[in-house]
Amino acid sequence: MPPPAPATPTEAPAQRIALVAFPGIRAFDVSVITEVWGTDRTDRGAPSFDLRRAAVDTTTPIPMRGGLALHPDRTLTWLDRADLIVVPGLDEHLAPAPTPVLDALRRAHARGTTLAALCGGAFTLAQAGLLDGRRAITHWNLIDLLRTRHPQVTVVPDALFIEDDNIWTAAGTAAGIDLCLHLVRQAHGAEAAATIARSMVTAPFRTGTQAQFIEHPPPRADRDADTLAAVREHALRRLHEPLTVADLAAHAGMSPRSFARHFTAETGTTPLRWLLDQRIAAAQKLLERTDLPMPEIARRAGFGSEVTMRQHFASRLAMSPRAYRAAFNAGSAATDSAKAPGGNSPIAR
Image 1 (cartoon, helix red, strand yellow):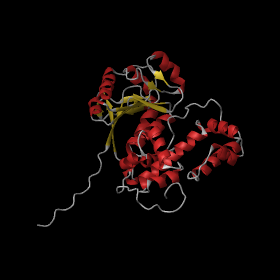
Image 2: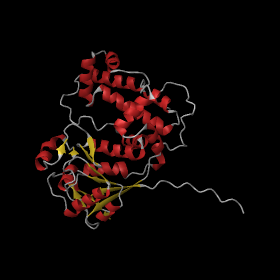
Image 3: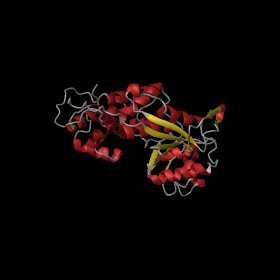
């Protein structure tokens, strides 16, 4: 008898995403959720998703502002199957959500399903009691309202998005995009999130710890803004070097104190935190795309040593670089004995 044919590799099942729909949800947030998880980009290497619009019933369109309507394709029972449940923000933030929606969200959290709320969607989770005793964020203009109406919630004022007990909340508008891309990054890796971000023509990596509202206006002079942009480009090309804030300030022709002030005003984060975020992102891409040994990845990403890289991964990602590679490297099993190619570019092209 001829030997059996080798088994055909099976594709990973599509991640199941539930968009919770009920009257009053914001059309913008629905669009963000649909753009991130509802567009097929598998031809570009992005993972596959199964996005469903779940409501109390599937026969009644959900009205939204601007004459728009959303047509649900699943009832709330589909939340039992979802891997991730996303709640859009609301046009009227204090409008009560339907009781079946609140009950379904409570059951989902009890099962351990990841929940995420964009902007004013935090009010829906708070109505369900899911944010009591937990940290949450919403649009900066709604922070006081959330504190007043739900005093059991620990409202964090300065963040783009945060997580507490598998419940994610995000600040307003663009921060919802940041959170959605971050959830893709968590589940499928940095390269998958970057692929989707490129398609959306948006920034692929903004850490949730950035301030959502910048108290100080950005520099008025175009020259200053151009200088800071040039400094960031300079840093990205030299991540493998031991850059410091003083080095970047010197490249900008500013004192370290003045540079840090202008940088934070323009970006919402400090130069040191921004630089660390870029190093982590560079290491993630190398772990996903290559089988370079850990010391070489640490060098190219500018961590200096594997120990330092491991410490930062544990702090930011709650996993080691090796665990990250095992989860997100789509190629053959990586080995640290692989020979590292030459060159100083922080990212393998």
